Length: 181
Image (cartoon, rainbow, N blue to C red; front, side, top):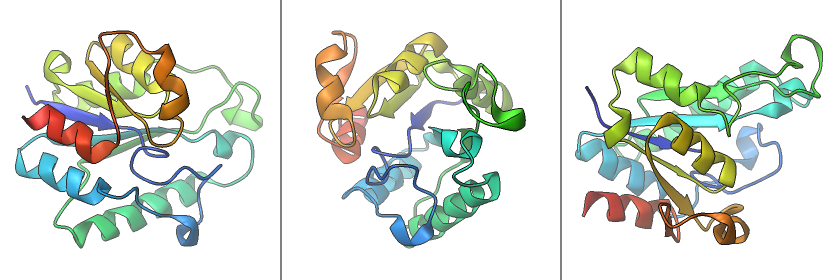
């Protein structure tokens, strides 16, 4: 079984911008590419798990999400870094059409993490989720992995709500350095 680090996207890898989908608006959080490179060098699988309710709300399409992920992947290549798997939840209960449904993939539920674990033979007991929201932490706990909250994105305001089992770090780079020490 493989060890993985699950990464939230918005507010963890990239600067939080409401309903980000335009490539021109994408901006890495400082140190994010280096953090992913360190995980790659350590032989740890990197899996992005991101809620994308903008699809359900009609703000953008699944193709827009996929195109942005391709752009991020190309940018990471400049740092000799890569993401092994990209998972996203396009659903929201108050969305439109076939996306307007309760699902088990929308964080704080663990569906995306569980799906990745099944697909890629991931050892959840030895894996970690890094995110900037309580929903990320709850998804990680529900999936049985370790949890790290970063203070970027919404993390600084959510920090007061995490329990003692969750490590809190300033950003993704400090979180990865903590994991690898």
